[in-house]
Length: 154
View 1 (tube, rainbow, N blue to C red):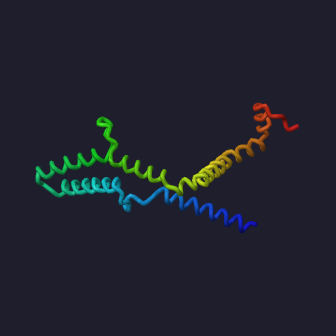
View 2 (view 1 turned 30 degrees about the horizontal axis):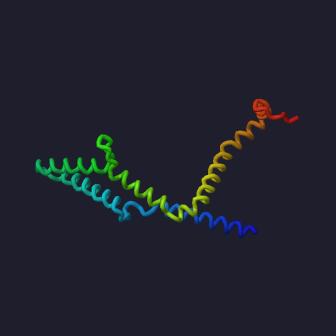
View 3 (view 1 turned 90 degrees about the vertical axis):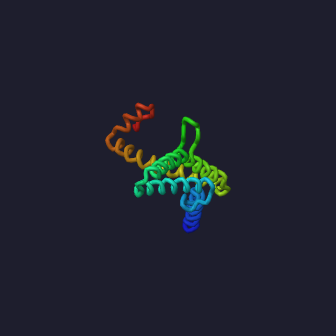
């Protein structure tokens, strides 16, 4: 009986771990999607322009590098004036859509919700139970219960 329960818990935790791995997807460095490649390209442009600014003394080249870096930064991050989301936000939007379309996530959603509920209950009990026990040992629990309208111990 116990070994069956332990095996069930092991299967459940394995399912949650695999689903979590699929939800998170491939790391940014390994992602070959269009949004990731666009971000990587702009990051590389910023690195190269930084290198040019450190090493070059040519004023025209330095001015070009400054303008190119500004353009790359503008493309990477949201521009609220022009209402453009930026490549970083688009990348995370693609990751979010990929995650939501995962059939494994849809199948395992009840298990994930169960894990979150279980965690919440453990944390709640961890913080409230010692306080309730301390109140009971000092006699304040009876007074607090009367305040809430609960019947007395007697």
